[in-house]
Length: 191
Image (cartoon, rainbow, N blue to C red; front, side, top):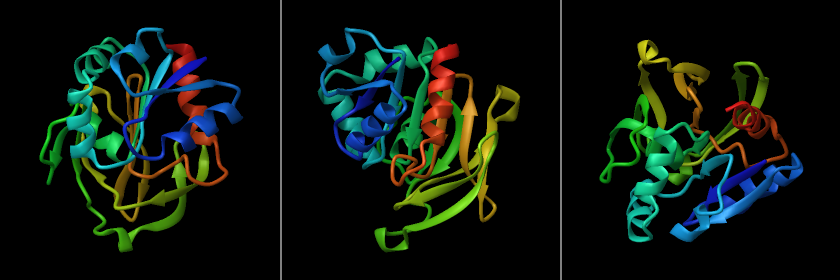
């Protein structure tokens, strides 16, 4: 299994490490040529979503990746990656791929100093660790469009799935747990 990890900013190395732990090949995507060799899935890591959106366009990655996601390429978006997938984002300056029928709130938990760790139920995985860093959350989902809520903390939606797309407000790449990455690889394997 070969998974591309957007490597413009954020914790892309940590995602690649998790993939290696699960015997999957993770590779960095920095320029358009990096996606020509094909992939079974894509990870959009955390970072600064408006900067990532601009860099995706500057490096000619936005159009090709958007087309691949729309054609069904499995994608995991974490934190800023969630914002890139959301069809609607409050407090956002630059539009992302807008391929998931969710509405998110950028920096919903406040400043960096408001970051936190918790353990909550994740559908199909049980209780898992969740690290939130200047995180968004999902304000609403369109269940009629097939969006399924996967996790909630403090009454707020923090993970959802639609087709081959998974979005988490937290950072599953931080810490020792690999369950979210295993969940995603299973989606990619069956896509």
